[in-house]
Image (cartoon, rainbow, N blue to C red; front, top):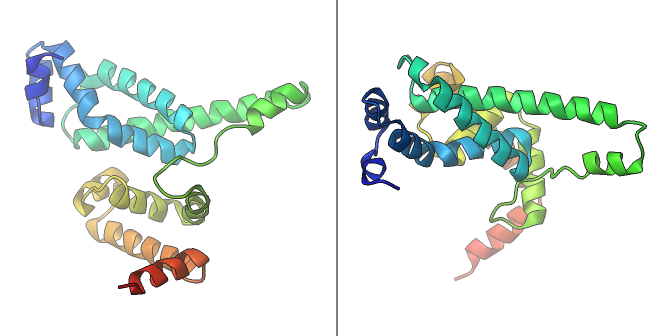
Length: 202
C-alpha cells in the first residue's frame, strides 16, 4: 500500500485524490475506509456472510466506476448505502429466481438452495444470535435498519437521517421504538434472566 493511500484519511482527501488523478491510491483508501460499513449493511440485508462478501465486492466495483459522477449532494457513506441496498436487492431477486427454477430439478439442487446461511456469525452465542436476528426481523423495516445503523455501524442520528432520507426526529423515534420492542422481546427470556443474575453478582 502506498504512502499516499495511507495518508488519505477523510472522504474529502479521497475525493481530492480522485480529482487529481491518483486513482489507484484513492481507490485503495476508499475501499479501506468504507469496507466495514458496506459489508455490515450487506450482511444484514442478505443474511449470509458469503453473499455479503460478494455484494461488497460488487458495490465497490460499481462505486469506483461511478465515483466521478458523485456530486456531493450527500455524504459518501449515504451514497454507498444506496448502492449497497440496490446491489442486495438485485442479489435477492436473482436468488428467488434461482430457487424458483430449482423446483423439480432434483433433490441435490433443492438442497443447495435450502442450505443458504440464514444467520450472520457474530461474537454472541449462536443460539442468542439466532434469537436476536429473529427479533430484528420482526421489526418494521425502517425501525430495524435505523437500529442496525445506530447500534452496529455506530452512526450518528444526523448520518442516519441522511441515509434513510428522513427527518432527524424520525430517525430518533425509529431507534427509540426499535429499542423498546427489542427490550420487550428480551425481557421474558432466559437470556435476560442470566444477564440480570450476572449483574447481581459481586
